[in-house]
Length: 187
Image 1 (tube, rainbow, N blue to C red):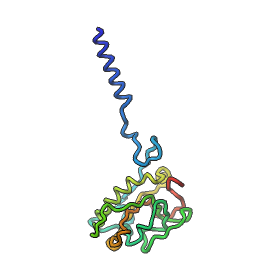
Image 2: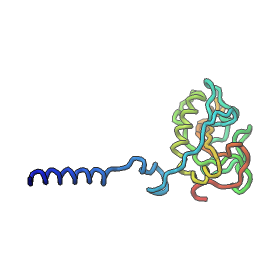
Image 3: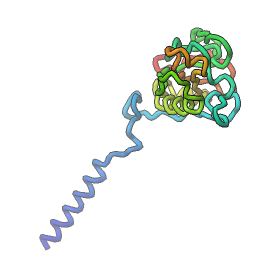
Image 4: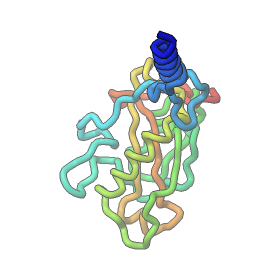
């Protein structure tokens, strides 16, 4: 009888310990999250819209405005840009002024060779980088205001300048309209 009670007690303590000290992988904060209890809301991305700089096209043909010839290396997280999809160098403005894109992260492409890797390779690199870097953004406000994540990479011309081999992660309104808010975590 005593042996049965010892076995039942050991099993009970073992099960209690298993459940009491088990880590919940869903509750783990993502790298860069602001607090142990916070989990960023998902941002819409890659909608398939041909005007969405984050969506993929067939083959190596980039969507309009998603690959930029110059000036990616000059942008930094927190910059608000009138419109990155237009030709010419990006014009930054204070975030309280109308702008289409807000940069939330800028990183080097994984391939830094002199040979242009192509849009498809850079698109995969950009999507992966920006998904992990979005923790620099106030995602709760971005989702509440119906923003989507987009990214920009250099085109073959821009690739010739090693200082331009960057991925630029940004948010914009789904309809592409201008906004006058700052969505960085420090705002």
